[in-house]
Length: 156
Image 1 (tube, one colour):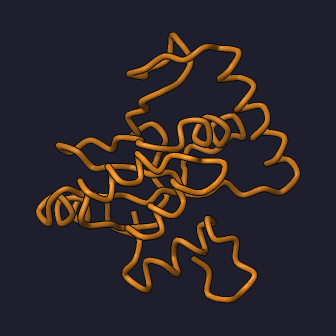
Image 2: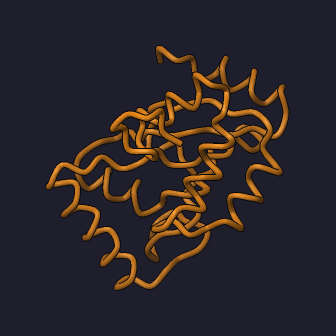
Image 3: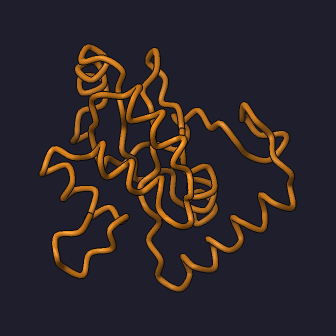
């Protein structure tokens, strides 16, 4: 994943390097299959479904359709509050110690930014006071890719 440097292989900087090599799909697959993420199934699913990638980009958290989170929040799959809070609290502590979370993985589906991986990271970033999260965005078609680039220009 890395380029032989001291860059964390799953950092924003490493995702930029992968984008420069036109290998964001490989970066996503490696990140999702890595220890800590341990989601090779999602990696295979996303890299099969999404053939075009952009990123990393800062996206407004408010525009992300979150799949998982605590009950009472706008999520598709509520999770146990204790489990949720423990994971987010651990990330909050790491952030206080200087940790920069990896980009979240987003799929652009029917004009909606669907947060595929990174629900805990988004919540931690939100709690830290940021309204944006770094993301790598995948697309099912070249038309979706082009539509996103029109709707979400890099200098937005």
